[in-house]
Amino acid sequence: MMKPYKIPESVLVVIHTADMEVLLIERAGNPGYWQSVTGSKDALDEPLFTTATRELFEETGIVADGKDIVLQDWGLQNIYEIYPVWRHRYEPGVTHNLEHIFSVQVPRNVPVMLSPREHTAHVWLPYLEAADRCFSPSNAEAILQLPQHV
Image (cartoon, rainbow, N blue to C red; front, side):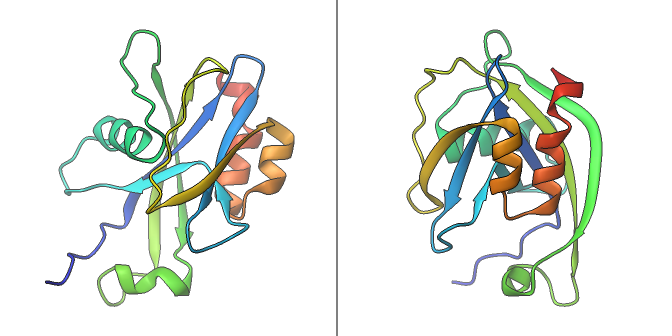
């Protein structure tokens, strides 16, 4: 059975500590591709907070409970060109994605449980180093903007 096409609207969730360390995760199948949590909407009408909460949990095991761990919607969006290697996941002719930026502050000792299907390693880095390590320019730019959103 063929999986349905991805919706070209997604979230980026920058996970950080109070002292500006950022969690990056390495993509399975793409060694050296470090990133923050990302993911597409599951349905056109799925609220962005739902997408961000779901992806945060699916990719890291972190639960944004709205009390101790609270997602922040930055109200920022990026439109970027989808890398050709991943365009087959989208309907034919779709070349760009609309990405909504979120962040979440967590304790440094928060347990991180990666989805091995999606990611193979994680690392905590000071935010400037994390931005340098990201393969995605929009992800790096979001991390560089982190001090304005804490």
